[in-house]
Length: 131
Image 1 (cartoon, rainbow, N blue to C red):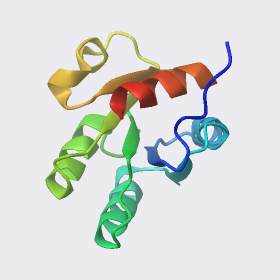
Image 2 (image 1 turned 135 degrees about the vertical axis):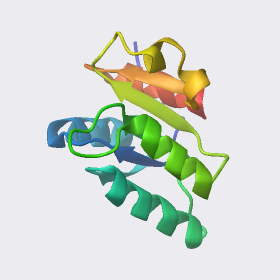
Image 3 (image 1 turned 180 degrees about the vertical axis):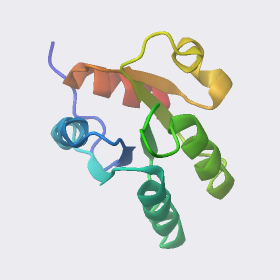
Image 4 (image 1 turned 45 degrees about the vertical axis):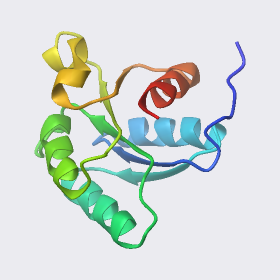
């Protein structure tokens, strides 16, 4: 099934500790016509998010890894980012299917779920749901 490139120009921030996952999501987002920015942890992600907002070029959505070893996970990061911008559109990403966040993402402030492993169509669907 072909994937429509209807996300052209959308700015997407990805916060994930795994370099391969960041690389893969970045390639998917570029294929969809998005403008991705990558962060390996919540500190870097928060800095990029705040800078984008302060310069009048906010992100359209954020994809957050649910668990980041040695750093705050997606739920905590989302809470921090929502203090900066309460209108944040967030997607939770995880390879763990038994998390309550994945069962009811809206209850935790997320608009969509991107389960790992994922394909291009999964990224497109998550963005459609979040945006």
